[in-house]
View (cartoon, rainbow, N blue to C red):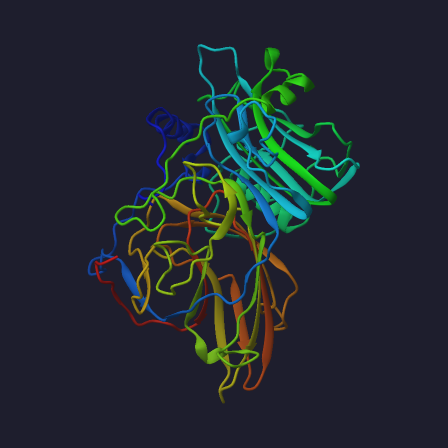
Length: 487
């Protein structure tokens, strides 16, 4: 999307070099995009302009919870050591404005995504990232990890999880081999399956008046060509008392981790340089969303999708789609913005959590066939072209695009099984290009009067560009027409 932050020129060149090495291209907001084939020319007579699929597009029921998320994504490209984000009080610190002063207690999360580009003329081939915390009171605090995962985009060390941007098919059912491409894809997959990275401890005891280091993780580039790597880290935490938390970046001696006292010194310093000034809220014209460096309100979106005034969704509602991660200027005609608001954020960074990266969507669809004939429907997650006003449907590209808009997992329960009975949870990995009508995740077959409960879960991955839609479509759907050229 042209209105997302664009890479710095030298990083843009590095990203194209990386395509030759890993079959990948780095897209906002993180390392992303498997190698794409050259666009295929459509058959004679097929329209080249986007296609409008006439259907209902409805707001997604439900909403975000109130769990706080420390959202650490600005800068994406770290250019120097310092504080990345801090919820510590600023009073008594060397640079008070480098701290957001937000107490975290009970359930809270951390979403962190960064890239480091080394320089051949320097000896700094590893950037180190630390997560530190401290009780806000005079009592020790027990901090427990509920779920947590981290991954590099490229790892040359078997002890460190990595997820290179390998080309994957558009739809890949979960099998005996893990399917992911990119660190956001891997982390979302592991969180969805409630795994914990061995690099992350399961609990910590935070002593009062003491800065505790939760994790120290490397972002290495030695041995890579180009010298470019990324790391995604997501933690779901629970504390029995109020704490402050910060993420910090530093270089260590000879690629070794910095000494513990380094982190305390950094916390009394300034911010690592930010990037991408956002368009002010409500300003007209082209919109630059920027990246988030703040504390957002909302970790999980829960909702039950029903027909108006009913406790179930009529199968006759299809074709119908609901936005996933809809945002300002990308509401797909629904007037719904799902973006999490920010409780606190740094000047010059995004003023809302555009894209809801790391947010879990947990959706239930109590489906019922209210007609007199059997019906068969398809369930799909799709990446239509980004639009804002109502169009009477969704626009899709008539020819394949290069840019990848979604790369990550989705879990569905209740689809038709081989014997016609509803299946338990099934997981799929999706790779979707811009404006792509995706292969169905499966079908739902209902006799007259029959009901079926579907449950859909996904964690919006860092390697994605919003918005997407969850679609329920008749198996035999045609009626497509060229779309208007207006956005």
